[in-house]
Image (cartoon, rainbow, N blue to C red; front, side, top):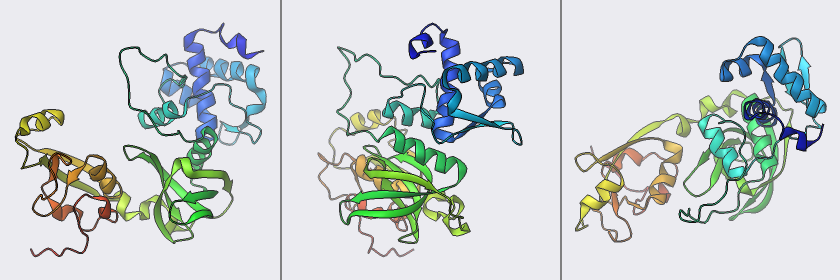
Amino acid sequence: MTIKALELLSHAQKERLAFIDFSLQYFGQVTRADIIQRYKTGLAAATRDFSLYKEYAADNLILKHQTKSYHRVDCFQPLFEHNPDAILAGLCRGFGDGLSNDVQPSEVCFNSIKRAQPNVDVVSCVMRAITNQLAIRIKYFSVSNGESIREIIPHSIANNGSRWHVRAYDRKNKGFRDFVLSRLTNVEIISAELRNVETKDNDAQWNCILELDIKAHPDLKHKKAIELDHEMHDGLLTLEIRAALVGYLLNEWRVDCSENNILNPNQYQLALVNRKQIINVENNNLAPGYFKTEIYND
């Protein structure tokens, strides 16, 4: 069959085929039970979906009878094309319908101009490594250190408000780091046994959840406008956030984290109330006006 023949299928059929295709590409495997659970179909219907998928892309998958799951093969070629931004947004939502093609732009509603999006194949490889707890070898381009070859063990992908990052254990620096997803090239999964220290459970900054209290900057004349922007209650917004993401959020939101809120309120319209919360955050150097060398007296 040709790709054109896909257009003759119903949307529901394409939706399920896209789910199979997406799962193979980004998780490396998929089962009939996954189809049944997601689309509330029966076993026979799920079996027909896989048979139909194999009519289009028989060389994309292989059935492992021991686990009764279909696995991606090395020569995999995706049956559907996905927009990188939609892929990452879909992963955050738990996939969506898989049909993440570009939409027609509105003539009256405009979003901000976006940075270059991560490469689809890079996202695919990273996601399969995360799903199957595998190490990857990458070529990485850093602003401070330039080009380098790294072995990392990724466990999560996160958007810091302006860019997508990979949270991973870095074997070079022997610790957990953030890598800008668009700066990864030459990504390949490697067969290397993981040590316990390299797993997500040992990423203290990622697993620590902090509660931040944020208010409108005290020097603003009309605080109500900012309170409405952020749906504050009694002049306060309380957020729960992973320690590893705190610096990014405070920087992106331009939150004044100085001790006496000395930053310009016209540039920093928010202020952090409970500054002690971020004293042990590794990236608190990104927090506007905050200095890690401060010592608090209880």
